[in-house]
Length: 81
Image (cartoon, rainbow, N blue to C red; front, side, top):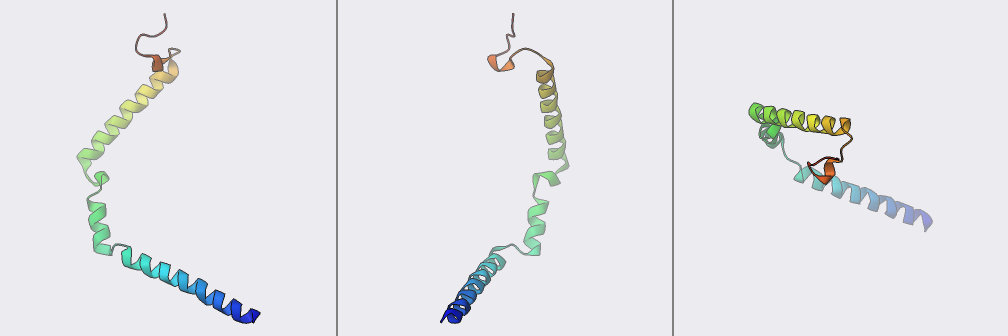
C-alpha cells in the first residue's frame, strides 16, 4: 500500500509539473513576438536613450551636490543660516 501511495504521489507531482510547463509553453510569446517586443522597447530608440542618459547624468549631479553639502536639502532651498 505504501508503494502504491509513492507511485500515485510521483505521478501527481509529474502531472502538476507537466501541466505547469504546458501552460508556460502556451502563454509564452513566440520568436516573432519576442522580436517585436524588443524592437518596441524604449531602449531601442536612440533619441529616447539620449534623453534617459541626460536625465540620469543630471540626477547623479544633484545627488553628488547633495552629498557634498552640509545643508539639509529635505527642508527646502533656504539652507542653514
